[in-house]
Image (tube, rainbow, N blue to C red; front, side, top):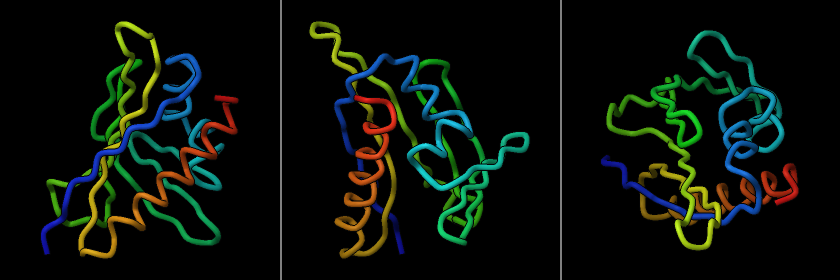
Length: 127
């Protein structure tokens, strides 16, 4: 089954430097994305309530974005990416999340998952 790309945008009231740290470091990710993270080379192992998944760091643009690929995902064209965008006029900081889902019922579930994660992120950084 083909996967469908989903792009979500969240306004985050914090500096891009703080936000980038939360997206790219084990300590930053464990504050909002998962319970714990182990990092070895370019592999991030994420832990949630007794389960774990490993993602490979595919790319990182300092201060701008980070892209991961789940190891178990056989579809080479899927990933999840978090990009920081700063509005030129208002200087508002936005986080753009790109992820993929399959099946009609999974879009809403994926949206809720990211909404909850971003809520935790905002609490962790006070944004």
